[in-house]
Image (cartoon, rainbow, N blue to C red; front, top):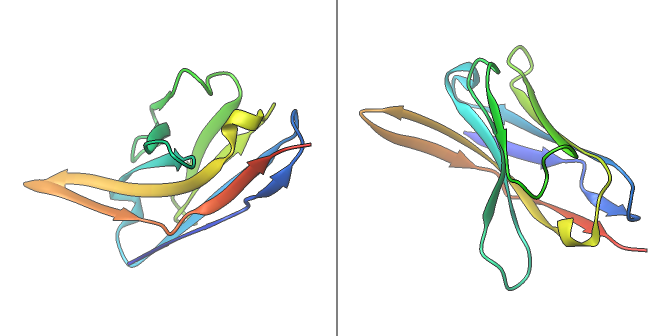
Length: 118
């Protein structure tokens, strides 16, 4: 099982980035996917989530209207489009796959650094 994030980097305030998380080794289309982030000295927080079919999404209040989560089940990839980035968006962003079948099954990626700074 692998979740590999990419697309992070350094961007100026107001800029955009698109994160990708490529999955392998499990039935991607059966799992809900989400993006989390953790800034230095802070707890990890849920940024956005999308259902297995892509039919429903939810977002942290801090990113609503700026970030969009999407998925392509044919490519086993989930995306996070981040617009109007702010310095407080600086964090390590990780993707998570989760499914409840008798118990929770979850997988995590290694994370990708996003730094918003002028």
